[in-house]
Length: 328
Ligand SMILES: NC(=O)c1ccc[n+]([C@@H]2O[C@H](COP(=O)([O-])OP(=O)(O)OC[C@H]3O[C@@H](n4cnc5c(N)ncnc54)[C@H](OP(=O)(O)O)[C@@H]3O)[C@@H](O)[C@H]2O)c1
Image 1 (cartoon, rainbow, N blue to C red):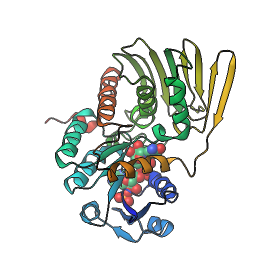
Image 2 (spheres, rainbow, N blue to C red):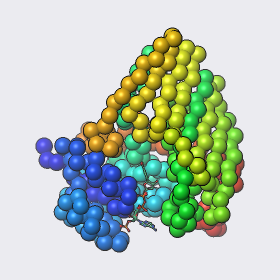
Image 3 (cartoon, helix red, strand yellow):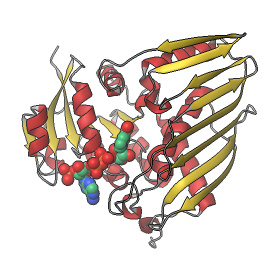
């Protein structure tokens, strides 16, 4: 079978990780990149044969089998639309879009066109999470009652960069809050019915520290905080009626987890073949080759529910981006 050829729109920082991890996926290769600002250094580093200076040209290339979109949040919707209209399968970085209003028509477009579309939520495909799933499904911790987590890193000061820039849909909720939201959804297989959020809005007008308490239809409670003002190890704990699961030291990219139940602890350490994106890349290639339009492991419904939840949370903390306030 021919190698599966990826094209990248927006070869910035995270695209380097994608390109690095793609190297351990034998059935696929990086064929093209599209960059407004050159991209030649990226192409040289990763041996990319084709470089476009227009995103339109990349999606029009018949040799591209799928597009990985790694532009700032604000551009995801336009870049997805461009790719789907050209019939190109899409793997788009998180968050899927900026809000549900942008997201909903794109899922519809993917259905109409019969073209694959998936949010690049890499955490769900990591080996550790496959074991955590078996722990949850076997009832090892009993019924989940509370989930607690955090994801923080300090030092973001450049107001133009995407983290703090409201014009690029910055802030902790959309950047890192999406991780606990999408992992909790995966753990409980539900979306919350009650949400109580609060945030510190920084000088640029986006949330720099954020905290939320959520309740799910089955009764489970979940909390998390995110921040650009402090450092944390990024821990998550799932507490059930019979025990607990701890996914610590960066739960979003975890290689380790511990099950504590019946008076004993079982720890696992499951490293990656590369940086961890290889598993979501394999999932996308597999789904596309099977002719699917979504991944059953990160469905359109999941991504849409998460965008709706983040809309509801942003309404509570009073965070509207400048482009959302314009009339029409
Ligand atoms: N999954 C993860 O672990 C993870 C981690 C970090 C980030 N992300 C996501 O990946 C996306 C990109 O993040 P990043 O840190 O890689 O961003 P970045 O380094 O700023 O790269 C973004 C790329 O988008 C292109 N771009 C087009 N219009 C732009 C504009 N107006 N301003 C800035 N860049 C523009 C640029 O490429 P050209 O100039 O070459 O066209 C740039 O290289 C975000 O949505 C973020 O949430 C995911």
